[in-house]
Image (cartoon, rainbow, N blue to C red):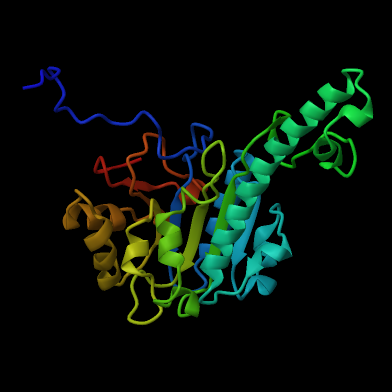
Length: 302
């Protein structure tokens, strides 16, 4: 029998962090899936666009993709955020697939920059070698339209970086986007792995605003609900709505503990932030009136 190490039965946890986009200590690391649940007119879009603004200030939002049939009437909520109309989509059955392809294209563009840069450096080396132009490989000479050094639009401290992508989904409940034929659940499962590059995937943070956590028709699929990392649960007096959420995201928190945190403060915040991950950093604080946070791992309020 082969000799084994003393601790070979121990589970070895990878050193790599699931949240690869690092931010300031007072904000969450990304990528994640952030869900805002509330009835109409309660501030879901305002809350999520503020989180997008915070992402931008953390250098964690280079590309914003939007799925919304009502953006034309809500643009005032996007002050300070750059909207590319080519990246705004209606919530159709094939929209998720289109967006996954777009993110893959961003990954290919990132790789192409490094390939072009390597070819450009090789060409510069040849040109400086005092060789005759006739002795330089034709493919190398014809690779570029001009001899300018390749550029890339996304940088930090003047160093090229992988672009960080955010996807906002608003007013899409009941649409074909949530139909069984849509690839949205698959996109949620793969959101951290989209946009493969030579330096790891780009990934995508998904922010969703919905009016109901569950719905008989056109609601959030269970597979999607189970991918959520942070939930912004706005205040409601409907016990059945609270029970719906607690039954799926309560974790090791009992129903009584859940309701006690949710209902105990007479100075009710606009919403509570439920953190559903093992991330060690603090949850989101959107503003003073939004700062009450229920931590489902440690059963306490922060």
